[in-house]
Length: 338
Image (cartoon, rainbow, N blue to C red; front, side, top):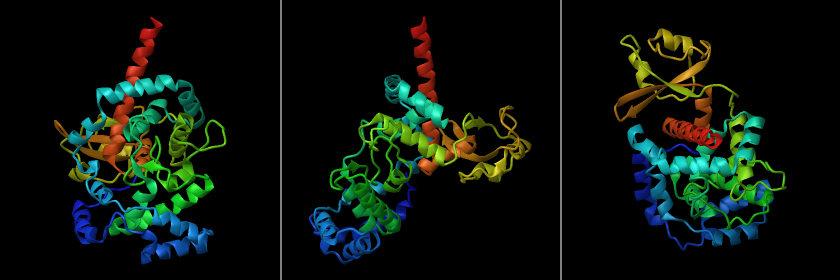
């Protein structure tokens, strides 16, 4: 759920700062971290001694910087797609849907986000909760906040949110594990997203996106609605340009819908479904497919998926996995009815 950075910048950062990384270093003695501790004390009322004790147990992890420097989103679509659109992930998605059908229906009814999209997100993020990350979140965020200059501002903010989150949720900040970037639980929320969008969907008094599928499902649906998901609207469809299509459109990289569907039709995309409003706004999503370039209509709901992870590749993987799961789920239900 964060933007990837230029690989050259990342590698340069590793070479410049690798010499400063010491896994057993007492971070509470570092000047930059002491300033951070003072800020958390002054602005948010944290106990200084408690934070010093926390950072004394926190560890900088060089492997985290290596991991963030080679994001999968740098791959072309034809190499990225097979990572997530697999028979195993589809089968597990159907299994997850069947197991949590009531919860998914409740979420879909309340928020308008289709069950398959919720399942697709959790499937892409953590294989339905099977792989939620092995790094201590405090280590991930501290490593990136203090020893990764290209994104230090962002991750310092996330570290602040993490400390506030664990205080609010009454959780030991040393106890939670997640991804190398500090994403947590079945839906892989970063700290600020947890504080803003995680919900107690089953009403048990806790927001547990790690072990409670109800809260994970409800939180994903809530995240999408809060980012503008429109109930019942289409997400995307493949388009074919004509010889008259503006070449600039076929090279666009913007994810934000900025063209009317009518203008795209007039520009040569004649195979856009007729039931899509001419006034609807859309982006042109251009991908490097196995059989050549692919061009997709990125409607509002596609853009909302990219708010989860700012990547057209990611959003398309979620969409296509969700469609495969929906098809298999419907087929299995028909078979059961026979």
